Image (cartoon, rainbow, N blue to C red; front, top):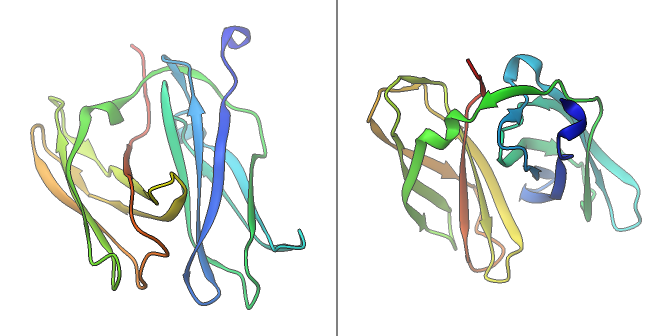
Length: 200
């Protein structure tokens, strides 16, 4: 019953300058409903709006996303062109209502370990090991990384994917950036993304 579902929270949204005039953006979406989510087949549409320090719209990007149950779903957009303007604020909104279903979260079956930040002050890379702890093959898992400074402010984000992971298989995942991070690294979040599966 949709009336008993907790609303989804938009925790925050930020943009990160990747190279001159080009930004990546990420938003953290929290869904407290343990058994309800949005499958990729019913992906919900959203909009990022990027504004300069005078609150003038610099760029926008639309897309669609699944929503994981009982978890944070990071929403990532790459290579947003801001021209010669600087993005100061990033606004995120959903532009349609959700098609909720009773679902499981298969992304929970992918364990992330051995996170390492390399070359943070030159050409940064984050590497980690992803392990499929489930008994079935996983197709096309995506991974979003968000790098924070020691004060908990996000300073960089990126995304990568694998074509498939056999049961029990471990694979290295790598995220790269062309320019040094703007500050020291505190914490690194890595989220596996897989479409929720219907509860049988």
